[in-house]
Image (cartoon, rainbow, N blue to C red; front, side, top):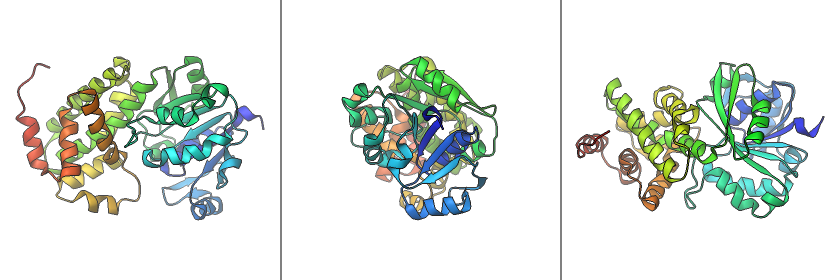
Length: 338
C-alpha cells in the first residue's frame, strides 16, 4: 500500500482505538500500537478493545501492534494518543523511526507537569534539529469527541491544527468522514490550551453537580471557565476566536455536561465527599484534568494570569480544601465588570 495511506496510532486506550477505527474504517492501513504486549495480544485475538472500548469491532485494515519500529516505519502520518504524563517517554522512542516529511498529530489533551509544555512543544523539543532536517510537521487534533460515540459512528466535529494551513487541510482530508467532520486551523497553541484547560473546568462543574447545585451554577462555571481559558491562551499568543470554536466552547460544554466525561466524574465524586486518592484508584482510565491542574496552576503563576476557578480546583485536588468552602470563596470574590 502507498506510504501516504499508512498510518500509525500510538496509544491503545479508548480514544486511540476510536481514532484508529475512523482511519481504518476508510480502508487506510492503520497500526494501533499499545505499550503492554499482553494487551495488544488480546486486541489482536478479539479484534476488539474489550478493556477500554467494548462492543466496537475493528475494521479489517486496523492492525494491533506491539513493535513500535514496525508500526511507525513507512508512515506518512503518525497520531500520538498517549496520556500527557507518559507522552515524552513514548515519543522519544517513536522519534528515531519517523519518516522524512511525515506529519505527527497529537490527540492528547494535557500539559506536561515539569516543563509546562503542550504536546507539540514537547515533540519539537525531543526532535530538536531533526524537525527541520526531516521536514516533519506537527499538528493537533481536538474538539468535542467522546471515544465511545465516535466508535459508534455518531456525528462528531473536531478541528485539526497545524502552523502550515495546507498541511492542516491534508490532514483534514485524511481524518474526515461523513460522520467525523474535521475543520482546519493554523492556531496550534489555541487548540492545545483550550483542549487541556477544559478538563479543569469540567472537574469544577462536576464538583458543583456533586454538591447538589443546579444548572445555573454549572452554566456560570462553564462561562467563567471559558473566560479563564481564553485569558491564559491569549497570553500565550493564541487567536481569541479559537476559544469560541469546537476545541474551546464545544469541548468545554461536552466535558462539563456529558455523563461520559471522566473529568466531570472526578469532580462529581469530590463534591459527594470522596477523597481524590480513592477516586483515582477506582478509575480504569486517565482523567487528564487532575495532572493538568498542577501544570496550569504553575503556568498561570509564571505568566501572571488570574484564574480563580483553576485556583480553587487546585486547592481541592492538592491541598485537600473542602469543596463547599472553595465554592464560597469563588462566590464571595470582589464584584467585577464582565
